[in-house]
Image 1 (cartoon, rainbow, N blue to C red):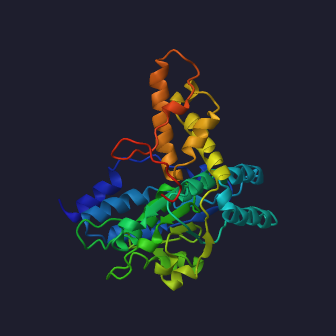
Image 2 (cartoon, one colour; image 1 turned 120 degrees about the vertical axis):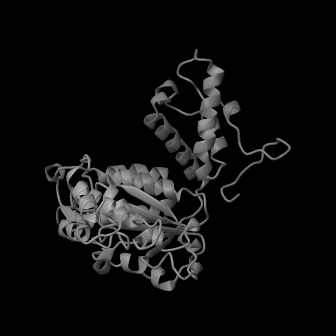
Image 3 (cartoon, one colour; image 1 turned 30 degrees about the vertical axis):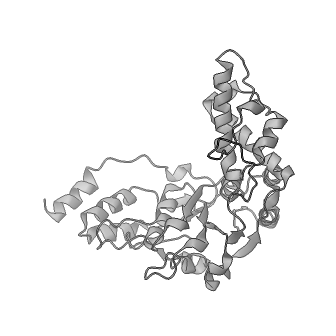
Length: 348
């Protein structure tokens, strides 16, 4: 098959993917790529793999909606603050952005890059996921502890074997919004001494004027990433290059207090019941003794332990008792090799 016939087939016979119509977008929008650039790239492309991806891109609408603060944001923020009291400084930044943005509608969500510092397992990912839902925007996260190059972020050159678009362009194209929250998790674990620095693309992406001209190396098309809400997390900030740190607001997140841990467990329980089809079979309230037990676990382990307790309670009820009530004996905390319970603290 000649290159011309392959290109013709991609233009004419490729199945049309469902996508939003421009008329489906409400409120302010932002153009994230120029379709003319896509057509030019297709016309001169020799790489079959890149040609197929570009053909898929040409069927996408080039605009994305800009998420705006909901009118009842302050009310929702109070609920979030109660559930995640140790994130009060981040919550305050969001509150201030809402109040100031309301002075000049539309109140587009625009937050500064934030670096969250603190020990692992204190609920950073969960908080940001909940914040994204409260804001009404999308949420994506990337674990830097496993990255070895910047290709994952900004794409690999199409001249290399097995190269593909990067995380940033994929996130923007998947998102309904031009301003999703993107978490760069454990950014301090990036291997910056390598020839291909994973943090390399971030120097430009954290500055709005250069982020407007972001180029994915695989697509080789300019994309506007200037509206992305950047949040990074780290345990050891001294390992992060100073130019990256200087572009972000640093906030230390304390380990949750017992009272805050209590609220976190309640919030996770409510979420499980509200997002699972089987949730309606369980009691709407969790036994206080069970909450205290689970509060001794790191935030990232609460969900697993709670789901296990729910399953044990369901087995115990044998399909007869409704609603199913989780009891203290249904909860299993971490055990040592001798099968004895170990009391776990947040920093364990």
